[in-house]
Length: 459
Ligand code: NAI
Image (cartoon, rainbow, N blue to C red):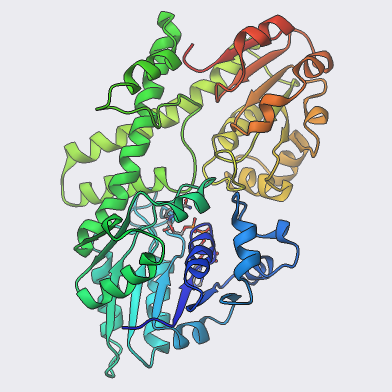
């Protein structure tokens, strides 16, 4: 099928950047991103590019180049679906918070709503592309919904999971390691392959069956998260043995069978995907009664929770077993650098733990809005919103956040933290001045020379 118009449902961290790059690389295709959230769409359409809802290096330039030419953001979902030959479903698939599979399974209600919406509106043949990360065999459910609409509209379903990493989304999209397309119909697969073919070499466009494609995305995230939990497990052992986790990571990473990437010990992984996708994988394995498989992958999450918890426990024990009434400075709220996404960020959990111990937390993050930080903390429901506002303050200036603090926790590896005037920070802190570097970004010797009590992960 020749594709002239694409509609993407879901203008989030995936839909926005992915479609912006597809539009840039295919000037002859009209790409419309639709969303039920009018504020999000308004932000994507904002003249002021610093107000875009997703911060990614390089993204604003691509939006500036394509928006209003062949890239459009709209709340008119039905119109978008009706006009397009190809529809991407890129809505959120969070962990279920209710009912069967609560806390484990992926909540597919948004995906199902999209399928029903497409079924209601479509008057002509459509290729429906699963861009969201979905449990293996979801295409079956989408197919069943679409095929029960009656009429003679023909639907083809493809799985095209997204492998971009937040913080490097544009780079990852422009130079993907591979693009994965799973499907039954060769014609539909080739229609999508042609779109990627505008900039991705054909030998990097993998064609598989739908189920392999769906499962590959969950598997990729499980393997990536597993590497982080593996090195974090070793980091705790390092702290008891005078081994240095950075040296161990370097030594094992030079083994070509292991490789050097994803071996940074830290406070643990965050983000919207790793935890939810592994929980989903565990849930699927259990649903087939594969207990050993489920237990194996679940351990990646257990270790990650342990890593976050032991970071805040260590802060408290080092600060003479009490943080009550003490001001703690928190550098970074985003789950990693170069993104404004805070979902599942370790900073939220560490802050919550410190507030339980009656600390006062002062936060600075270069890209995350204040309202988002309070939303994240309030979502945990540990205490009232008023209490959270009284105990946690948010600052636009890092030096102001760190003034009069007993300790600093580095939660995100933002580059700017490395170039701060650490002598000046030491001078404005209470003494002894502690730094807990959850990302191993500062130099221990330098910090000790200034006078800090410095501790990091796995050293
Ligand atoms: P997101 O939450 O940033 O965006 C989803 C958007 O879908 C929201 O703006 C929401 O309003 C909209 N939406 C929900 N239901 C809708 C409906 N019925 N009609 C219209 N719009 C609707 O989510 P994000 O991060 O973009 O993730 C989307 C999917 O991509 C998820 O399945 C995720 O697992 C997957 N993914 C995410 C990656 C990431 O780094 N964030 C990377 C690769 C995959």
